[in-house]
Picture (tube, rainbow, N blue to C red):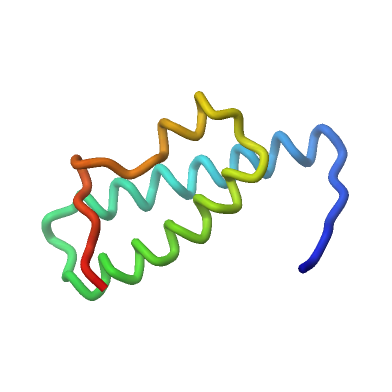
Length: 76
């Protein structure tokens, strides 16, 4: 486990970066042109970034990025 200390401005920036990354990955997961293997890789990365974001995001914000039926879960 690695711990880090951030000031308020750095926390806001990290929040912004993670949200934008999650948005991009959700768009990619909805793209019909992408291969299933690529989508599986994106889905794995999404889980990691989502867990990072979940550590400090309020539940209302977090629910925006919870995957649902719009983007079906990929089989492992």
